Length: 112
Image (cartoon, rainbow, N blue to C red; front, side, top):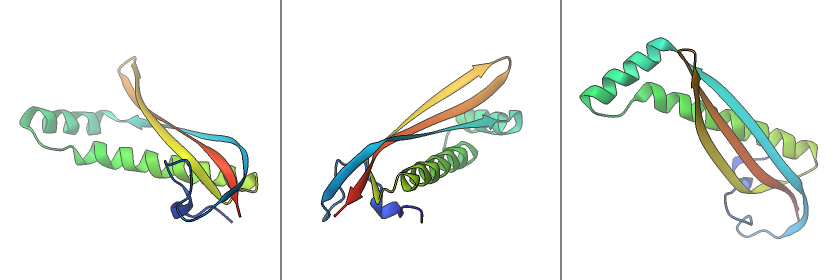
């Protein structure tokens, strides 16, 4: 059974719960292509001002995917929670293509 979102935290503990055992570091990597059409729309939004909904949606999608993979990996270790979750975003570009890289890491733990 996958770990519930309320048992994934950026803090070193789950509020109101006690960690019984640390099972190890878990990580997930997500790479999303940002297509030319989305790039153009985002560029227009940047030029005229305002928030780029298309890019925000891509960022949310990457975050959700990484958290799901983090939870799955921790569950395979027998964890009840993931603490110390950290997310790092990077852009990979070259050859006229843009990619968004998100790496999520945390510590899989078993709770009492």
